[in-house]
Image (cartoon, rainbow, N blue to C red; front, side, top):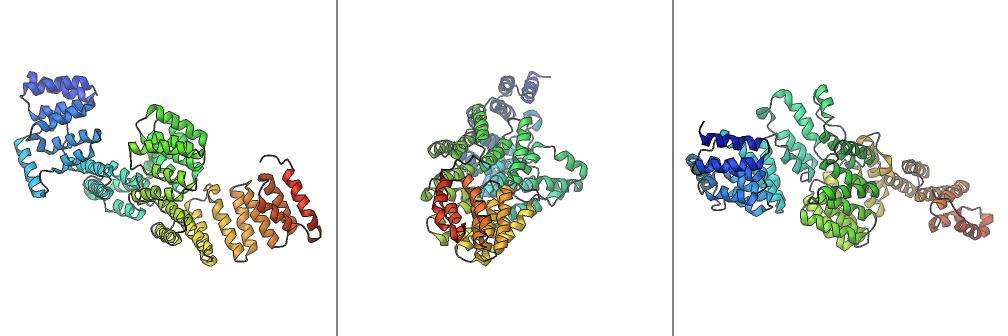
Length: 549
């Protein structure tokens, strides 16, 4: 064996065992011994990338003007630019800016590849399906540059060329660039038959569907029983289920899954992201503080770390600190959609609706497959008096998420506010039915507003017994809620069942002693012959030392 062959073999060996220094040393010697053979240049570039010397790797890849036109060289050079977050330069390398003519670009590449022979064995670099990886890189670069539509096209094309390139599918799903119907159409259109065996198709579809943004628990594809049972042990499948629970407002099962995954793997970033969002929804500020501190200490370069900190301050109603950390998140990744949503919430909860609208609008442009930013945006327009715009946004959300109870309820509230109670009732009952379809064991606390909204609508229509039934459902869903007891008392007043009304007023005042509406209802509930005692009685209740509940 010649010294050149030995140097190459050593470089490849050290690359395989992640010994970057050894790989760099012997690749450099092989390059010198072969008088700058492109194969050795490529080997040296890989070693430098393993050492995170991306600028130097990119330089030597582009020095040879002929070799730099080949697909492997262009791909690795673009990877270097991506690692340096030089997104425009990465696109330039991948698209060959010397000509916008595709035929010219292809002929240039073919001439270079004919002149330069890149050996997969020497370079330790497989070149099959490299065009797919180039599409993936182009998608990432377009995404970072804000060209979302171009990024989506690249990811779709990438999946068509390689159905196993799950990073493309993950980016489409996690960033919610597609609607649920578009996601389903993409999964169905993938060339499974051409790229996999028939016995793998049902399992692949099951795995891919579990990654999608659907609030329903049942999946249309079921793999063989043994494979199904084994797949459930995968941490990523568990996180997919957790994300599904979260989208269905089923927060407690979501947290059970994320906690289990994080106990087994404390640095599982997907689990940490879903757990952070679930803690925000469940208002668990202590857990947010803990996970935020851990993430910042270990991953200070990640947007998620600072987002967790921002969420903690959002729950503390410390909006200036919230925005401070969200600005840091957006400096790291300006397309991090949860940060835009949190930005909007920090303004909305402080009554700054005009400031919240741009934040929610940005989130809506990024998360085209999610109803959440559209709903939040509609609420802000409603607060500012632009009811027509709010109505259009709600109808748009309903058109793309016809089965979502959250969307249906918001549209129903719009009809309620407009005095169209029959339409509101029909939609609220539809939302209630869809909640049961999501999961019969759904965490009912999340739907307490739905039950109270149903009760208000029944009351407006004069159906008082049905109103009481829904208020009691809300009380079961979320016990010890003062406003629900007050609502129940008000319905009993309308039914002229004053003794029961007084009972619920008393409970409500124990929970919230300064609620003037409850005191007013209480005074209405006292028998007519004792009305003169009502003010004194109310005064006594105000000064009574009620226990904390």
